Image (cartoon, helix red, strand yellow):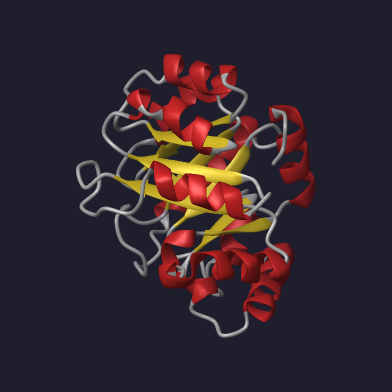
Length: 232
């Protein structure tokens, strides 16, 4: 596990563009094996979607599963808190092993305190926004962020169609702070959309069904990264 924010961010920036496998799409009956398979395929990080059934209309997994994942891998854990009251839980998820913690602007109209708390705990701090949310809502807080996650679907379920509004947001964020921020995109990232995302400025491409729906993770990850690098 990466020990400091700066070294973690340096590693991820230097590896970009990279694919972040979203474990929500994996086979949870064989979680440890799935993690080993994406590690062997060359994954540089793992994306964990935490859903509370309130902020999003679905439940996923919580702290005990994050702890189990942490015991199973040394890869950085990118924990996306799709929950109503993230300020109550960031410390517990950091203790569980999160290296990166992302909260939603829709749940925290002023996220300054939480972002500072995350950084103070030695994790990278991120903000996320849903497709209907205007980019102006996150702009005042970019100096407190290490990561901005642009949702290209409404969060809650996998397999949704990519919303093109994400590309405009990525371009705007890239103009504002693209060299410093890790710009991430999640939802509908696949062979057809991944190149457009990196062209717009995305450095982390969160992939769920596009990766875990393949028989050969190594081949699929190689295909996706090639498309991301060549922006096709």
